[in-house]
Length: 397
Ligand code: PMP
Image (cartoon, rainbow, N blue to C red):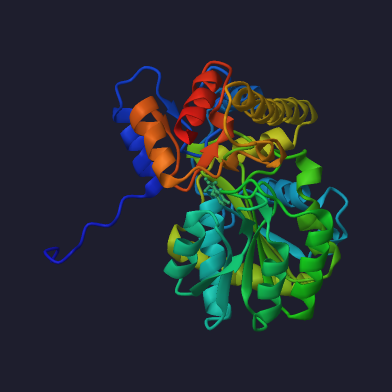
């Protein structure tokens, strides 16, 4: 049965992790994987999460199945975080949400549902994008194309190229957009650019699929949802996949959601019924633990304040590390200006380092990064940043 099965290529980022774990050097630094670590290099367990978990364990709750679309209070909290507490769309019943297995699970059920709805559509993702976007949509049976996005010359967005591509797409094309904190580049769209994209999406009847995995990591919960809310204001039907992996530091608990904005309450009910069929045949219903914690934290004023405080601290620490890396690279005489690193947002930066330079970082200095030159700035800390800056300066020589 399996004699002709070929060995699949290793996942480039998870493969990097394996190599990192096997590296005996005590000074090694992992800037490869997209995980936030604190100044001690540890994945934090947020206070609000810990307190909620304790209370849940003490309550010794039974472990029944959740509804197919998850915990109602969770789905409702997700909608409010994305669209705002006073969203008229939520009030009108035009938004439906299903708890999903992380942002990845949300993309997967969204992709499967879209394939049933519009099987001949193409999917357009940014060039470059989170590598799983292509795989997920191709896996669902779609043809996936790239729209121009990153401009290495400016370390920003090639907006003319992007808009040109969007304007060329057929009606019904599904366009995946990073709501904030673009992965892998750290280069985000400006407010006026979002407005233009919304205009084009509307005029050309594109299907926007906003992926927001880092809400709260750029400027704050509400500020980071600006683009999502503008799409809502524009009276468009669109998809949003969201994730609490990073913002709640709950990576392994798989807490995300798929939200869909439709034109009416009636449409929402019909769409949700179909989405539930997709979920039922994928994994039946989502897991309880992570979703229950997030719902409890977001539903309690004190816990929510504590969460926002810690999220703010994570955001500030990343900002400090970005500024510090730029400064330190200057101090150690790096032959390039890295000022753009301080402008980029979220957990990642496209450093502009070549695959060869990244390879040297690993072999000579035990510093692991993705071969595209992407580093996770959220993995920098006061103990490793000097070594990282000096190693980058060395490989640039
Ligand atoms: N979308 C983007 C852009 C991401 O960067 C990630 C996480 N790396 C995800 C989705 C998936 O998030 P999760 O880990 O919650 O599945």
